[in-house]
Length: 126
Image (cartoon, rainbow, N blue to C red; front, side, top):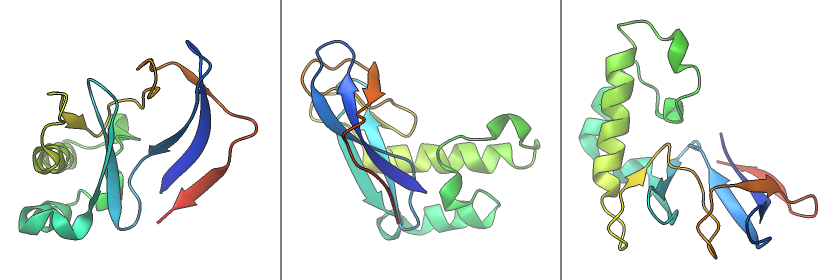
């Protein structure tokens, strides 16, 4: 399940919102260079997406949690699924690449170091 929370940048103290993870109908990716967020609806990922999920890589398994416990049969479909989603997401305007496992970054200084904002909201989506 995807989630959104308030964060405070450890480098510049800027407060911002972070969205992470796949939801029930979409997946959120971040640019590996600037941290810009992109959300893709599963319905926009094409027939190949659904073919790969039918091979055992569920659409909610995109975040990589539990990969170490995967069998040799389960690992290739999940990797192919992630590669497909990242290919569809394409390149960011900064020339970086949208990645499922790229960390969220502070929109002000681009640092990946941040702490949860105790005054920010936390919500699960999809």
